[in-house]
Image (cartoon, rainbow, N blue to C red; front, side):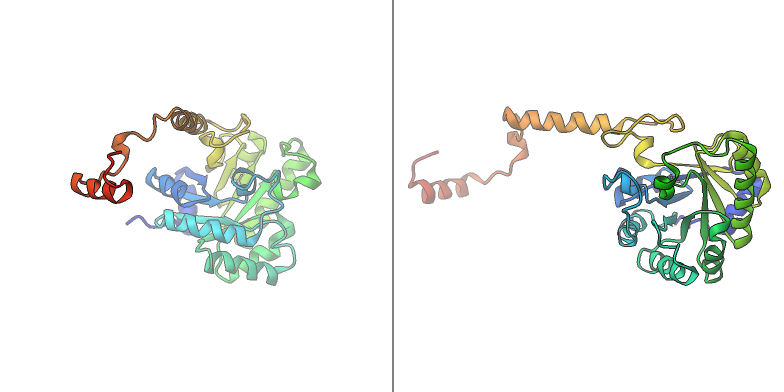
Amino acid sequence: MKQPLTPPKWKAFKAQGTKIAMLTAYDYPSARLAEEAGIDAILVGDSLGNVVLGYDTTVPVTLDDMIYHTRAVVRGAPGTMIVTDMPFATYRLGPEAALRNAARLLQEGGAHAVKMEGGADIADEVHRLVSAGIPVLGHLGLTPQSVLQIGGYKVQGKDKEEAQKLIADAKALEQAGAFGVVLELVTEPVAAAVTKAIGVPTIGIGAGRGCDGQVLVYHDMIRYGSGIRDKRFVKTYADVGETIRSAIAGYVNDVKNASFPEERNGFRLDDQTALQLSDSLYGGESK
Ligand code: KIV
């Protein structure tokens, strides 16, 4: 059986120049399909707040939400590395609280690693988790948990100062023991510079071609759900939303005009039992 990737294998991939393909998933069937399709790693992202739970931001997502969804994903993809997001504020109350919360994602959820948004400001927390045996994936650039403070989903790494800060943060994460760093909505040259500056893989989303791997949000990639906007950095590989919508519309139509169910969709009784039943129900009147 396929074995989940490990942090050392990630580093080896970078050294060999092997790109890493990562995708989010939040439930059993999507995880199962991702594993069957050969994905390297699954991210149970707190983007589930947006694409599964219908929130405007990831801020309301709780640790219990993440554990619940991680369990389903682990059941669907037992041979794939599962990284789960630490949700809003669960690693901002000091290293010991971060360790307690991260441990729940591994022990109760079954994740193999956690992801945390932030750079040098969370280096102590990253170090505490890694020294306790919990693999950590960093996340820099646009960090959606801070969207209320940033004031929107804005591209990062647009000038020299932002570039220098991103590189310094990526180095701080590597030094604290992170096995990789997600770069979200970062200009292509800056993402490439960060990738060159560190020895662990960078995983880009809206960060151009220079990263060591890519991650996309499941629902964006296959247009699964209503209200999905076209995002420039997403490549749409299928329009599952349209397929599902038109399937449901067909079903509604068939029920309304009584063309579903058909005779072949029902379960028959043998003739003798049908007759006996008819006798007992209708006193011998045939129906
Ligand atoms: O929550 C998420 O899906 C993420 C990706 C966008 C990287 O953090």
